[in-house]
Length: 210
Image (cartoon, rainbow, N blue to C red; front, side, top):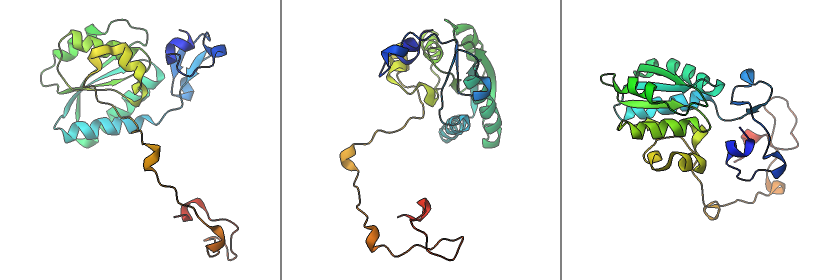
């Protein structure tokens, strides 16, 4: 896979576009030669967000579908650890490969499980889009949760209409005009004393500013 294909070409230096990518991982321990490493928020955050939202909606029987990549398996591990503590039962634990063009076999197993109420998907790149399209093709009407790793326009492009209704954690864009900046005059601030020594410190520590 070329780097341009992985990232959708958005804002990519042309000199890097044809770089060959052997694999992707968000776990530095799983990175191999030729891999693209994604430094993104922790897997525990996604697992907690999934479980908390599902529980709040009364969804306590969940099917977990994880990519076999480092990212997918780390997310799987965290979700399996978090779910029982929150009273959420993982009733299916299936996996798929990052390059799989079809995941209907795994989804058919999930659909056959009595009482499953939602599907958690852990993956990056094209895989989650394939899963999302397969879910729609099989007529599965369950709520689908994806990770912050697919919170992009590229995922929507790849998944098409099937992306409608997918739930995922993502940052909210703020209008810069709505943010008010306050000017601070250091000359008017009284000397701030360090909690560790008796003399005044030259500049306030980060947690001491208003």
